[in-house]
Image (cartoon, rainbow, N blue to C red; front, side, top):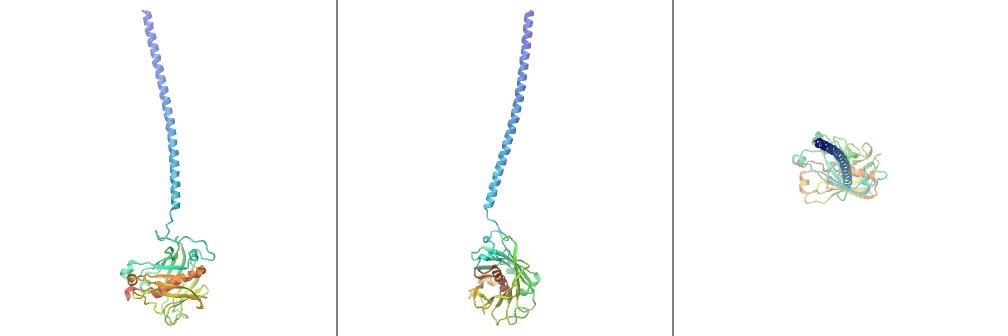
Amino acid sequence: MYHLQYSTEMYNKEQYITVQNIGVQCRTFVDQYITYSMVQSTNVQSRTVHYDTVQKGTVQDQNCEMASQQPIQNQPNQGVEWMSAPQAVTGAPPGLEYLGALDQIIVKQRVELLEMLSGYETQNKYDVKNSMGQQCYFAQEESDCCSRQVCGPNRPYVIHITDNNGQEVMSVRHEFVCCTGCCWCATNSSCGYEVAIEAPVGNIIGYAKQHTSAWKPHIRVLDANRQEMFVLRGPCCWGCQNVYCTDDIEFSVTDQAEDKYLGRMFKRWAGCGRETFTDADTFGVTFPLDMPVPAKALLFGAVFLVDFMYFERAKHSY
């Protein structure tokens, strides 16, 4: 009986020890599993962060590379094909390097809808392009509203000329004169139109001035010391361009002695509708390719004087 009771107690004790050992082993296993899981989770997060960083860096690099391959959208006009930036030209005013690669400039005035419909004179805007239609510069008039409506082409104005970065590189300035435009007394009096040409702004490089003539347009281009450089002479019938006569109105460009033909300045026929209802014209000037850039800039500036003198008029007044 005693032996049976002892055996039963021993069995229960061994069973308790066995269960206790199993519990300890289970807790140990669970602790090891938790530790393993935390380590694995840390590794996965580390790899994920590293992968995301690599991917983000790769995407950013690809975006930068793609952006560097995209064409630069120049201002002030989006979607306009601009002329490629030229190399530096010795002796050229800053920003006028484009002129060194050109032998022709096209100056196209923009059509203003308000002006076309109402006759209200707005500030002129011009696109300046090369012979291939690529834009080189943008020009815009600055003047006050009252003088535009009352004084017409006699008004004071400044033409601001900017490059494809929106930087002003040149200006053409006209001061108000009460009585101007008389071709018989233009040279030696205040009756003649005159503009000052600045490049860069604030630095006068020359002038374009109306001179005496019997009837035909006569303009002289002067340097900063008012020494004559070029002579522009227009046709007798400069105002007769119409649907029956659509040829260019040409102004010859010669040297100061009028012995050497250097190029021409011209106004193109813009079409019946545009010519009838707007004063938005298209002009051009040609010159030798090897002409110094400051001299080209003077002829470029003279285009605006020709526009205001002979073609800046209110169509509705006729």
